[in-house]
Image (cartoon, rainbow, N blue to C red; front, side, top):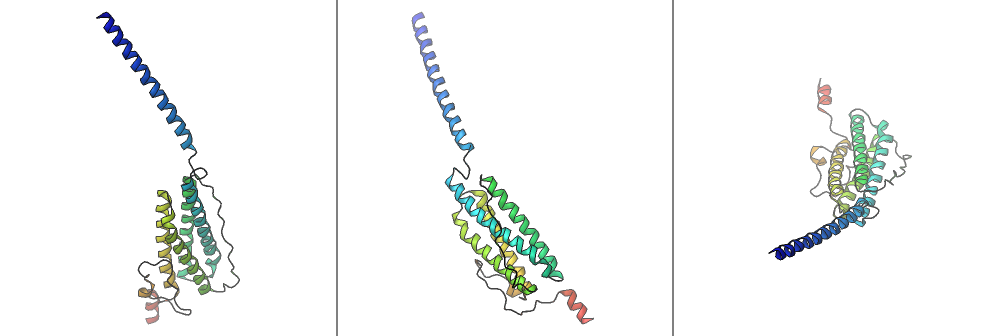
Length: 214
């Protein structure tokens, strides 16, 4: 019995020793994996690197639109000047959101606004048509990019940006003279709906109608 107990005890010790070795190896492997994951950002992860490139392209679009609304806001008159301020404020939100998403996946912010030629932008309608062109291009880009994004946060942001620019296009159509029905986008609009014809006059506000009828 003494010998059996000694053998059993020794066996348990050897089994425990093997367990300790296995556990130690597991901890070591986990530690190495954790070290690797700590640098698992856009520079070392191909999927995040791809998303970072697409986000930088998005940031270029948003910075360009922000610059456009900054330069063109003084051309807007009356209630459209307030609209211009609101659209510019949203562009600031968009640039901030894209910048945060880039940093969230370990990407570098490399985007700059594209140069805009304002030489031919003479009045309010010219500017609104430029804004419409930029907003349409942004919507088309976000629709195209959606299936090419790998990580969750950039995909969610892409959808929100597409929705935001689609809404901007609706109010810009109204600002360019489209009535309520004509300003409604087509189903599955991918940024391809043209602006209203040049020279269209926006419908007067309710206040303007009251003033005219007084």
